[in-house]
Length: 316
Image 1 (cartoon, rainbow, N blue to C red):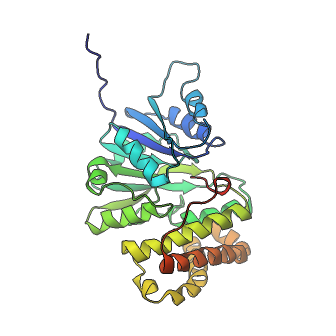
Image 2: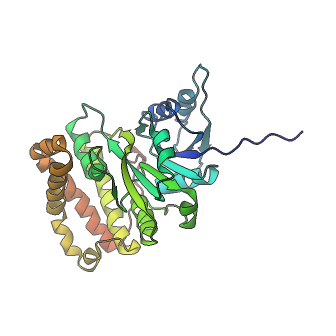
C-alpha cells in the first residue's frame, strides 16, 4: 500500500543550530505559538557536538492538541551558518523559505505576516530585530553594531542589506543564486549583494518581527567582532561588495571606527531615540568594539577570510 504524501507547506522555516541549547527551546516554542499562520514546517539543521536539539523536539510538541511539523537534521561535521541554511533549504518543501537564527524568538504573527508579504512583489524580505527589555549594556552595544539598520522603529524601505537572522526568500530566487556561500560570516551580505545586483526587489519590513537573544559579555563580543570584521573585509575583497576603495587602499580602514560610530549616532537619532540616548552614554564602548571590528576588517581586506574559531568562542 502506497504511503500518502503530505501536501507541501506554504512556508518552510529553516533554523541553523550550533550549541544553541540555551535558546533553541524558546525559538521553537515561539514558532509553535504562531497565530493565524499558514501551513508551515520547521527544519532545524544542527551541527553541534552534543544533542542540543532534543530541546527542539520537546518544545515543538508538548502535551496538547497542536503539533508542529518539525524536521531535525543532525550533521556529523561542524557547519558554518550558510552551509547549515543551505542544507535546511535542500530539505524544505515550501516555495518560500524563512531563515531564522536559533537565538531569535518569533513574534506571534511572524508566519501570518510572511504569508501576507509573499504577494507584495519582492523576492527577499528582512524583518525587524528587537532586543529583549532589560538587556545589559554589552548586549545593547553588540545588537546595535549588528542590527541597527533592522531596529523595530526603522521604516520599511528597499535595501540590499538583509540579515539572515530573519530573512524571507522566494525559493526560486534562492535556488537560482545557489544559496549562501560557505563562509564563516558575511554569508548573508554576499548572498544579498548577488541577488540585489541581479535586479531582484529586496525590502526591509518592520512588521516581520523577531526578538534576538543577543549574547552579553564584552569578551565574547570582541572575539566575535574580530571574525565578523575579517569576513566583512574578505567579502569586499572577493565578493565585489560596495566599499572597493577600501580594497584598493586598506589604510582607509583606520577611519572606520569613527565612521561607524558617527553613523550609528545619526541613525539612532533619526529612527530610535531610546537607542540614541543610550549611545550618547555608551559611545566609547561602541567605538572600542568598532575598532576591534575594523582591525579584523583590514586583515580581511589584505589576507582574506577568517579561520574557524575555537568551539568555546563560536556560536551561530
